[in-house]
Image (cartoon, rainbow, N blue to C red; front, side):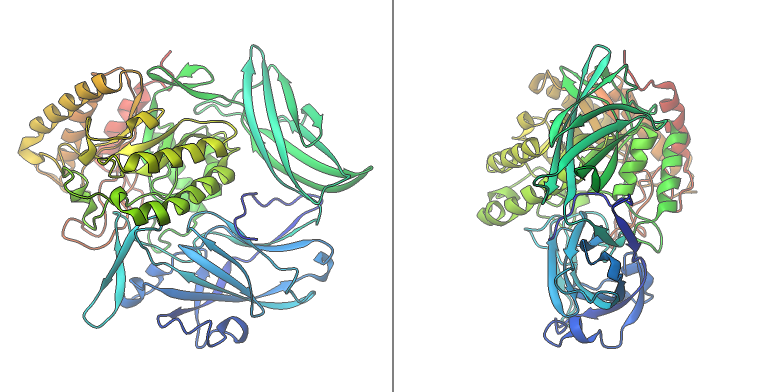
Length: 608
């Protein structure tokens, strides 16, 4: 067993043991671990490492922080004897970027992709009612054929460090929860749902994924927020009809609970549940419609990033970010540039946020200076012209999209998919690649949500070859920062207006959303008149951008870059990370946060 979409739940038939906490840890730069039997005999001279967390910022030396290669986690895990009659699995919510799991020396699972969950099945190698040695070999290396993409740089002494094709730090490790799961042998393995609204009714179509369930009776019950059943059905697939449903909406969510049960006669064999919001999402003409109503999206591109934890799961930081979003009057965000933790999506379900869910297809532009090269007109061969990209990257990309959709398909908050971030779509060679990715997403999603990608400045209107694939357009633009910054900001505004008029001609029937725009700004730097990096310049830039947005009624949303400052690799363009946040990395406001709050509280969520 590897990829595991189903979110763990404790029910009458299921149990969970939390394995988060302190694990043993060791780097393995020479890849000696498997040969020398670390998986069976233990890690030599290990140190303590918290899980979940990125390992990088735990250390005080640069070599450890920048480490690139294999590294190991290990922990002794007690498996109760009373679990022997069912399935016992260990679930890793994420291991960045790939992992192999060993139990008592035996390899039991491997997984590629650092942001989606996977399970290792333990029944064949576990010692029941006893301690078991779990070891995980993780690797954080990047290539042009991984998602995200990148490479390697080698120092004079032979040390290898990351050379990412993206502008955020390559945090890695066991960055999300690890849990031991007990489930029945015959079980509910998942459920697909889609919703149709017909007058005063909601029809929920479902399809159960069952394991070893021959001869068992399947039952599905939908329960409202007060715990009262409102619809039920028998069988592996069917339709639940809800009269006078309460719909899930922007900042006004309502969630039902969907229970799936298996019976042998009258005996309960298994049960699992998930929350469900009743809503429809579609693109019609120049609008994005939620429950048939046109919406205006206000929010941010974000990162799972915080001091010390790095990209490690932190429920306190997550909660703080949602409180900041609500204070701002926001109603949406994009999971830039990878799938976020499942807990963040459940929070967005409960809070009523429109989420653009993004696969980790970032860096599909050959550059380690992406913040600069992203705006330069393309020359010569592009990333997608390379046959190896089509042969090696495309299968990995499709697999990542399928995992993303399967994991997140029932979330009410997930209203659209982002299948690439800033790809170099300037070549015709990109078209068949992108077409296959878009098709794979459509095939995987029972709700057929809108699909898109973020268009990069170097592929402005008329250059991008793949716009016909997107259901709506997402633009990342930094005119006034990377293009015509400082005293040339009025030129930047004119350039953007000219481009928007060109988009108006090229894509006259699609809504547009600005998914990135902003300036690096050091909190507390004030200049009169404004200069770049000052808070005054950030305000000047945003006012100019908003004037342009408001000129075009087919711009249906704005998501500045970024909610908070975040860590990147080192460089002369970065002052301890990217400083484009409306808030500092420790979640305190810059002046721009108040400007955005004033604008967004006045802008309605719905356009009708």
